[in-house]
Figure 1 (tube, one colour):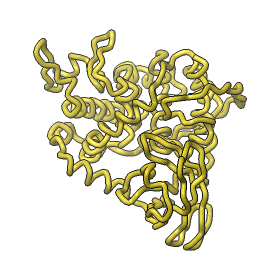
Figure 2 (figure 1 turned 120 degrees about the horizontal axis):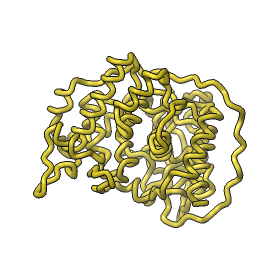
Figure 3 (figure 1 turned 180 degrees about the vertical axis):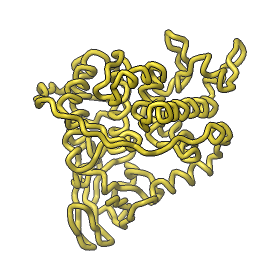
Figure 4 (figure 1 turned 45 degrees about the vertical axis):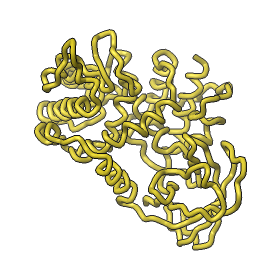
Length: 368
């Protein structure tokens, strides 16, 4: 339990450290992780609710299953962050809950059959990741529309909460005057549901920004125990949330989305990396035999680099710390935000451990 508390206490503090540089969001809605009320509620939930999370295993599974889910989300014009729901629901396992929910997306039998899946003694299509994803997204889109049309609220945060607790219960809370998930009276499981999703999202998407604050690599199979200090929580402050104005797609759009081929998925992945960002050519500078977690790596710029923090000319050398995740090195270049992320020549985040050597070409993706 102490290890669990330490891990997610550090997630919370890492989120707070980066909040000043950028917004932490879920589906475009800002999460007020710098707010004392939200922080305390998260800490209480972690201590009493959160089960053990196998981050190394989840990260490996995500590399296998995310590409298809991301492709379908893009085709349906739905937020990419929804892909983290099956991690919290099932940990990418075709598990059966005590209530009878089944598969990656933990669909109940009634929901699955209502949306056309076959569930009987011979076949359970809730265990088919493609078919289950289509049904889950249809359910999410439908709930989003109910909130928007009946309550005039466009919120994927509340939609995610409804996926866990039921849209009827969430609408019931809204009708009683509560429209903010972070201040809403919810059952214990739903009250921490979105927090879990956001914590996993941040660690998966920006590991190089967070690992330096953990004192060890949380994606490593061997984790040394470090005692965490008690959090110093501030007084309650009023919540100020951003509002997501996106709309959900029509049900037929999701229903008719075909299963992608491997080439479709790979093309979409590269397009996602390249979109809405400037790419700066760079290279590894120096030799790094026996590289290990926390070692420094120097990058030499082959182009000028303009960031929110200033301008650096071609030829400048930048040194950061590297962390090994699944035989790839993720490098924190010290910009204290996610606006500069390192990729290799194949548009994959980080660089293969075997390629951490002098003059290997890399790409800096700059999002200003």
